[in-house]
Length: 296
Ligand SMILES: [Fe+2]
Ligand SMILES: [Fe+2]
Image (cartoon, rainbow, N blue to C red):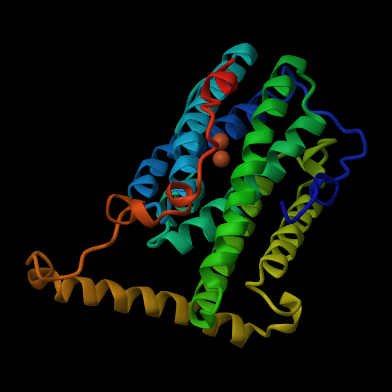
């Protein structure tokens, strides 16, 4: 990952979340995570459009992991006696409404940025939750989430290489998701006791979250200067350009729909078209079959 655990850790000063006392907040929070893990089904969509065999393998494994995470949260909720409830509208917007329209949007917004946000929240829970069995489950799951974020970062770098327009579009869309996270935190503040030992840190934790998101954008190469140096006008222009570009593409797809069903229209090339040139297929295999040794 481009950010270390230390860089992503927020110091809650030893404050604790206690299952009995903080039941209402924990129930709310766990239901948001549960929804997020359920959106792991979207991996199936991206597997069908995977650009190469390495990505396809990664996504196949990720889909299994995300569905295991669903079980993790159900187990955590059962252990703490928390009920299942619908997720907040902004969480739905961030994880379903902002579902990427292309591979680049998926890896940049959902994997690097989105799962990066979630990772910070998981670290915060691990560091504050006073419930050992739940923390143990989260510690195991977090290793997998770290790999998902790292994959998103690497793939985003690959996708934007030599494409300044795509870099600007992904930056514009990232600004929107950072705005949505800020709104979500504001909503949480209105619902939470301001004198709570953990929850009173929320505004500072949010600032930390956005600092990490900005650092990640810089290290990936989506942002070439501190965000503060981009004025409000420049930010607005990036957002308008990003959504304008997406809208135009949508219109183009709609207008060309009657033609695109004809067999002459070039369709998206999938792995079934490209696998023979895939680096994992063309690389020489060792003469000896070591799959048995691996399985053992
Ligand atoms: Fe997950
Ligand atoms: Fe994940």
